[in-house]
Length: 494
Ligand code: ADP
Ligand code: MG
Ligand code: ZN
Image (tube, rainbow, N blue to C red):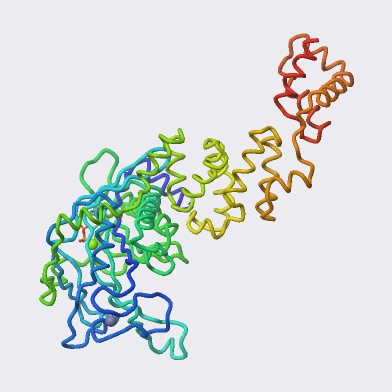
């Protein structure tokens, strides 16, 4: 049985409970505690210094810009910013962690108790956030791509000390799909707020998923597994589905779920146990003696709040009230800033927001989906500019082309990048609205099919569609359908 089928079956008896821990790299120019550049993709160990290499005696200095971005993220997700938060040392050994500890925040995080609203299924859902704290990223082990790979591994410390926030949700999610949709919404907020570039492949957004199940109707939470190594939204969803099915099978067989950390293997499409879940005391947390507590004044919070741009949720509401769009449509159109701006240009230039929304939601997004997962970077990848789409909608609204022909025109625009007007003129796609010409086609069709006309007149009015089809065929699909309908009805009423 497929994972999807097994998950579906498990879903009738068990309810899944999911909480996500999302790590987000902040888009600063430099690292969190030193002046090294924060940049992905450069040759290994080209952005390092005594601080981010953890050399003895080197002292951290907190990057003001990192705090500013973390505050933006906190306010954009409706969190309460704590007037004072405290950095702590989280001690563990790993070769990518030169100091032997990670500077993080523990019992006094930067921000607490927020929430994110997102569209999922056909409704609006809300996930509560437990906390957002700041920390530094670790370096990266390189196991492949070097002459000595296979014998030994290298360490790249360019990422060591890159500023991160960790966004911890309450276990409010109930399915892989919801987890996916929450992540999309969260990413969207972080991009709108300019906190992150949201690039999952480059590791700027990373997610651990905590998954448990419980018999339907039961209040108490089940034992959870924490799944790591989720490097795309799709893999988050796949891993959760797999994990739900695995836990259900275990319980059904009379077993128990053990609390542990599991690793997702995308190639095999399954999770495997990595280690038993570590407890907080394993890390011997203590306050970082080299950094003072971080104090954030009310004035600073107000300043950051005032500088936030319009966020997806607010824009969604505005789209509903300003353009009369259904909430769901507004949610889809505001998920990415690029899509939202594209839509608004089309709506404004065409003067027809409803049509703009229909075209963007169906044709534009469908065509883009064929190339990537979301609408980000739409401006760069969309061969049909918003002005062209608006022009096409105007051609429909003015009766120059029919809605059906418009689909063809749009497909051609997508391929050639030409203006709709140019395509319509060259291909002679103008809608036929000349009453005389259509009347002639109607008369011909009626004269050619006396039997059908007789049946129609005896009461089989459902045959009208068939007559419309005949007239459309005669006019190569170009006749104005409304006119065809009207003239046919009149003629058939005879
Ligand atoms: P830890 O400190 O061990 O990581 P937390 O209490 O901080 O544990 O929780 C981490 C994540 O696990 C949070 O996102 C939380 O919502 C989620 N979580 C906690 N309990 C459960 C559970 N029973 N099932 C699913 N997720 C859970
Ligand atoms: Mg945790
Ligand atoms: Zn450095």
